[in-house]
Image (cartoon, rainbow over all chains, first blue to last red):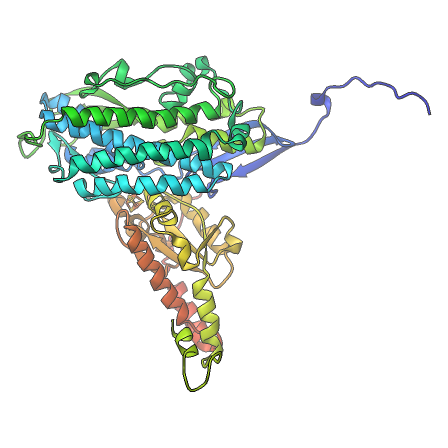
Length: 383
Length: 186
Ligand code: SF4
C-alpha cells in the first residue's frame, strides 16, 4: 500500500449546503410567539433572523384613546411577568408632569412590591431556562414559591398576574393588615429556595456544561446594542438604574449591583446571565428587608387629585429598572385628559436584537439556550 | 366515576362492567386528553402556573404535546392577532379528529381589553376555529381553567361515537359556529 498523501484543507472549504430552518411561532422554547429564521451549516448556526409582530396589541393606539389612569392596565400587559415594575415608570412619569409628590408610605410599598415582582420574574426566568435545558424539577420548585408571592399580590390588589395597583398619585388601595408578616415569611422562604436552586440547577455539572462558554456577549457589543438589565450586567457592566439614576427612594437602601465574573466560563456567557438573576433575587430580598424596617405604618395611600388628570403641555421620559432592564416611557401631553402619545422603550425588544450577533457559530441546541438566557417577553417586544 | 361504581355492585360480583361500549371509549378518551402546548400572551403565564406545582394540570390526564398531530385538544391562551390567527388555523387543521378547543381568557373569547382599538387583534378566536369551552377572565384564575377542563371532559363523555347520524349532526353544528373572516395575507 502506498503512502497516504496528506491533503491540505480547511473545514470551511468543504462546501456543505446551507439549510434554512423555521423555529416558531409555535415552539415551546421561543417563550411566546417569536419566529426565528435560522440558517444552518450542518448543525452550526450561521445566521438568525428574528421575525416579530405575532403579538402586536396596538399599545400606542390604545394610549391615544384612553385617559391617563386608563392606560395603566395596558402598561401592565406589556411585560406581563412583572406588571408592578411596568406600572412604576409610567405613574412616576405622569406624577412628575403633574408635579406631585406621593406619600412616604406609598413609596415604600411601591419599592417592596417592585422588588417582590422582580423576584417572581427572575424565578420564572430561571425556571423556564431550566426547562429549555431539560430540567423540569427546578421549574416546579420555583413555581411553588412564585405562587406564594402571587398570593400576597392578590391580597393587596386582587389580581394574580395583572394588578393595576400603582395609580397616579398613590395606590389603588391600602395593603392588607398582615402585609408585613406575609412579606417577612416569603422573604425567608425565597432565600431557602434559592439555596435549593443553586444545588439543583445552577451549580449542576450538566447545566454548567450546557451553558458555560455559550453565547458570549462581550461588554462592548452589549453597549453598542443598548442592552440593559441582567443581559448587560452578565457581561460585567455594572449598569443598574437603581444605583446610577436613583428614582423613587432607591437611594435609601444598601444593595450591590451584581455583575457576571465568568465564574465557570467566560464573562458574558449564558451561565453568567443566569447567576446574575440568581444573586439579584438575594439583593432584592435585602432591599425588601430594609424597606420593611423603615416603612411608616400610618399614612395615606393616595394623594388628593382632581377627577380628571390633565398634565400640563410638555413631554417627559421616565425610566426605571425593570427586572429585564431599562424600561422607559416617553409621554407627550397636550394639556388634555388623554395623552397625545405614550411610547414604551421595551427592554426585551432591545435585548432581543443582540441575539443574531451572539448566536453565530454555535450549535443549534445552543441557540435555544442563548434565547432563553436573554429572557424576553413577547408582549414587550411587540407591544 | 360512574363506571367504577358499577364495579362495586354486590349482585354481579366484582369485575363486571355493565354499560355501552361508547361509555367505555368516552371514559378513556376524556381522562387522557393531550393538549397542544403553545402560549400566546399573558394568559399563557397563568397556564404555566396551572401546569406547575400548586395546581397540577396533569391530574386531569393532560400531557403537553409539542406537535399538533399528537394532540387531542388545544388551549388558546391569550391574544390572537391577525398575524397569528392564520397559524392557529393551520395548527388546528393539523390536529387529528376528534379535536377540541378551549378558549382561555377574554382576549381569545372576544378580544378582551383590545376589543375596541385593537386594529391588529382578532376579536375572538371563534372567528377562525370552532371553540368548545370558553373560560372567562383576564387572566382566568387557574381554578377557572380547571373548571373549563372538567366541562370539556363532560362534553367528551356525552359524545356520540357509533350513532353516525348524531355524530355528523354534532360535527356540523360545531363547524357552523365559525364565522368566516377574511384574514389579511401576511
Ligand atoms: S385575556 Fe387578559 S390576561 Fe389573557 S391574554 Fe388577554 S389581556 Fe392578557
